Length: 394
Image 1: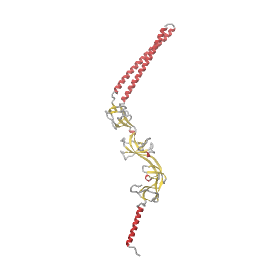
Image 2: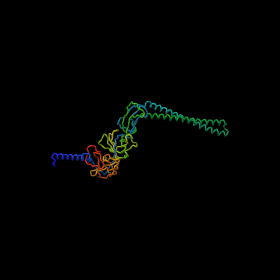
Image 3: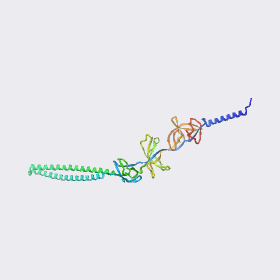
Image 4: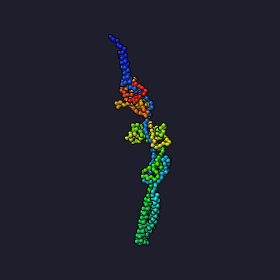
């Protein structure tokens, strides 16, 4: 029997080496290798729920000041940024013939007042004549019973008394007509006066002019704004919050405001109003947040980032949100133990902006869960814990 040659031994040894290398590659780097994962521990402590939104600075009380009918602007006395007081004249419109109509109405009112005074004098004279005629008629009637006057004379005095009474009624009616004419003329004068007053555009509040919209000589229509005034104390943030995160937002909750003009500064605020109507297209809800202290040089329309603290839970268990997976329509995590993983269904609560999810049921403090994995995991799969995974983990 021949002994194996050195060449054959070398070939066998080489084959064994290759087989060992292939086996190592398959079990450590190939499809049979344990999946590389990163893990984290279930923590228990304070968990703050927050929601985030983008908004703009707006004025809660803004006044667009303009005429109630078409007119031409005579002058504009203020410009953007000017501080104004309530009742201060901001702009004036061309009154056209309103001044003449006011003067004419004033003269007509004076004439109507004179007519009233004349009617009052006529009524007083008629009442005096009626009183005299009535007294004379009573005297004649009394003396007729004693035979001093004939029946014809007594009847004539009674007729005079009735005629005097009718004259009083006529004078009273004339006075009533004169007074109604005076009231009508005065109402016309007051109406024209109000139209004339509307030619003067005044500020309704103490505020700041936010816009000068037209210049002198411009013809404006009814309702068109000439200047716009805002109440600077009413500046707030109109923020849009995702409907899925807006359920816990309430009036009075604390907020953090970051202006685009000063990104490094966080300003405190409070939720002042939550709109009842949501936007069905963008699936957002409007939340208005007021400043605890109004910043200087704040511009209307500036973009703002708003963070709202909606809840704070004590002794809450939580895991990184990236560790939560959905398998067979069930939320859960891959629980790590002794180099292997098992899928553990969990009941979740709130999710924070810092990337942690509350676990209500299913885990205990200290449990280790898979956060990232280099490939899809299966129950009882072997895994290898690493500090980081290059590329996108599943």
